Image (cartoon, rainbow, N blue to C red; front, side):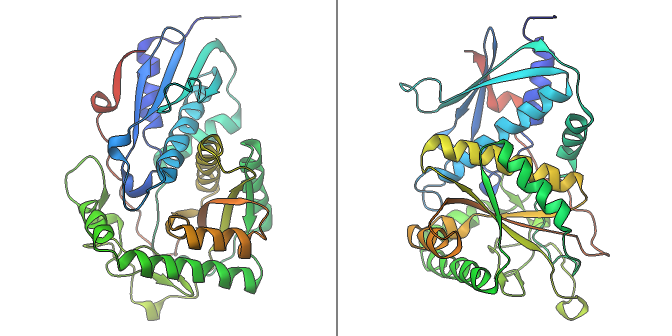
Length: 330
């Protein structure tokens, strides 16, 4: 068996691939270092949003997604990855150490998931009225389960009402906070910057699709078409939940979010993460108790569906250069 960690060029390529992961407001709150046996993922607390994300949960979710993207890259490159999560209690920002010292043959599923990475987008537009097939939804649930995370599809009218009400309440409360509005504007309508939400990736005004309100990014320029020309939005709402409410669970939830988003993209679906109702303690507790029946801690809401028939392809959101996120030897 061929042993030894990949060469530096391969590692750098895998890290660049991992940095395509989604993160709240495209903050990209991660740092990487290369060690003798593999790669180390660190949180970058300077990129946490103090008003939107006071607990750091969104930051951990983004870093977990980047960790899963790294695993996907290594698998497609024919490498077996061993992940040690939160390896050093004395360094809470050291989130994972990834060893990759043995080769493996990539599977068709490995290649398909990796191929989905450059095509995944956060699509905040209205979706088609077509429903997501049950078989596809089961695949998404299976992907999350492999990461130790539960996906619940919101199917009953009562549960959907409770969830959309929590989204609305959270949005109203955050919008009433001047510090939140300033923070949101600072990361919105970016032009020619390596982070933040570009104007071309966010609809103008408050996006509303049926009973669901999405977060408004001021200065958005993404055309969603006249509302009267659209059918009803047929998106499914999924809630990712964990049995525990700790940092490790948040990191694993980010890995599961990445797995679900990539599997959905590979299936041809449009996706949009919705973290807003989980950023306020009261609405997060409401989602836990009224939507998940108190059995799981909600980590992320995902909107999944078929893009509208005449929807233009979305441009990729920018990423910071590798030189900014990759440090020296660990």
